[in-house]
Amino acid sequence: MESPEAITAIRLISALVVLCYGSLLDWRTRKVSNRYWIALALVGLILLPIQFSVDNEPMSYLLVLIPVLAILSDIYLETPEGSAWGKYGPFVSYSIALIAIFGLGYLWVGEEYFQHILAIPVMMLVIVVFYMLDIIRGGADAKALIALTILFPLHPQIGDFPILQSDSGSAEILFPFSFVILINAAIVVAVLPIGFLIKNLASRELGFPGAFLGYKMNIDEIPGKHVWLMERMDNGIHRSYVRPRSDEDLPAEIARLSRAGYKRVWITPKIPFIIPMTISLVISTILGNLLLLVVPL
Image 1 (cartoon, one colour):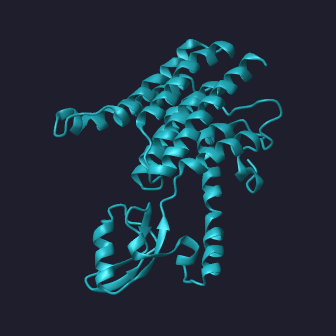
Image 2 (tube, helix red, strand yellow):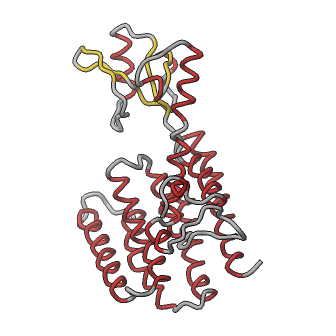
Image 3 (cartoon, rainbow, N blue to C red):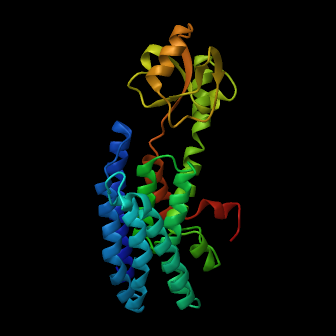
């Protein structure tokens, strides 16, 4: 195995070990400690100069760590509530990151290799925005993707894999590997409505769109389960909704539904997204970006 493939193998093994264990924790508790994602990001940071050396690229490219570390400082540094840094720190961190990204992009505007590297902090910012917009719902999910962004500055290639590859080198810059993992994981999750429908057909409990998004559960079985409600009592009026409420007070909502006489209600399970992300890592490594099947890039 040549040096580039050896580095890729280290990256893949590290990611699989952490993601598999994270999947187990996510399934059991829906909580994964920061230390796993910090460890994965550290592996990526350590391998970055080694990658530059193997690829005969200048070590000055390590200046990309300025925006990377600025973003990580906001994510992981704990500050006292009400302190000046707690108030203005995020603004300072992301200002440094944005200024550095534009400055480095201008400095090496014609270097395609560095454009792949600069995609690291850019993708990190995209993930932060996705989390703020609730597109990525879990903090651990966002931190896992950020760690994978740092770990995989380039798309992994071992032998003839991945099978699906773009003819355009710019496609890998526009769609970093962590973004491919996110998209493929979303495709894996998109299969769930079929499973929900089959389950609801078997139990003869149908309702649109609830039958595609979850299933019914006895109200006294809900406490302690990792689920969101799809119905609630709102000022004495029964309402159904399909988008889970992140601020839901589950015990209070259950009590209101129970007092209103409801015994069995629609719920949607909290999907442990680290699991489809782990599946997606394997799919993305072997097959590549599944979007290439429908959108030529």
